[in-house]
Length: 447
Ligand code: GLY
Ligand code: MN
Ligand code: MN
Image (tube, rainbow, N blue to C red):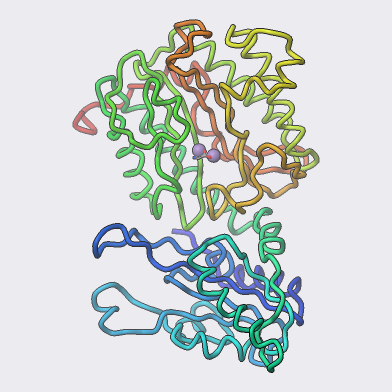
């Protein structure tokens, strides 16, 4: 099992501290556990920003970076130790553990937050905080700021100005360090193996959830924390629902099965989609649609490098997608006009990908869709996931194509001259898929 060393977190904090400067402070607040029902919570997933800066995984942790503070610039507030809690629910690090294991210069119990925070922020004018990213966190932070404003004429130590922490932290999170690339590679590898397992053991007559179970079994038994997002297993026209997660339909022999599933390994996400014929053979119409998506994906992959932009890739895909839909008889009309109108959006309604990292849709506001024009730089990891989805009731499209959904998604590390496909080991050519589907030894899984 890999894990990141304390040095990695210290280096990341140092970069942020240098940017915040001695007049400011950075605050990151982890969310509370979320209730699932009655007295049962969802498994706790720490805040990605807390994880990125500290590796600390307990609920509601508060990270405060106070550059140049006399007692050290990294303060961590952690849940109070409580023997009763620890007997029932699990161990807590407490302030001592926060210093020893997580490198905090100053560590406090969460119960001390309201008293300590103003003291630690004394004399600083700007608080860097991701206002609006989580309403529950804002409900805690806004009163501190409001308190300051109401007491404008009194001596108050809470900074009066709030700046967006994401503007400093997200460019840093966007470009991956060597250490986290090890974890992303492993997340991608486990994800790829899980897709191969599903391909091998897919049999018409199975239920979608059986393939989901196989995939998630593989994640967990290889040390994955959880699926990085709810696994999508859609057969037949369920594959045309972009984020279908019911996964309870039976798989018919003529179906394409679209699986979009990724492992979260040491809090880093993989994100792969494959679409394959349940019976092991594409129909001619399915094959044409599949090959069209694959050709577009490969054309875009060849253009991804550390010297291009999101807009260039998006334009290339828009053009290729329009041409493909015209060739398939799905769209009709003048290519230039269709590109201008973005007519392809009816059949390809999503962006071509997104950054990948501690979150599957990493660094939230940097989606690669619509109006963003982000330069691609070496060290970014992003997905490339074109798709074509033909609604089952679309009478303008040849009948044999209706109800078919195809998406092909790989995870790419941008390099100066190109990109490395981190999910290369997951089969995707027509020949590879037809050769592998259904070949798993039935007896191995009691099928
Ligand atoms: N799995 C969600 C996505 O591909 O963006
Ligand atoms: Mn994705
Ligand atoms: Mn995906």
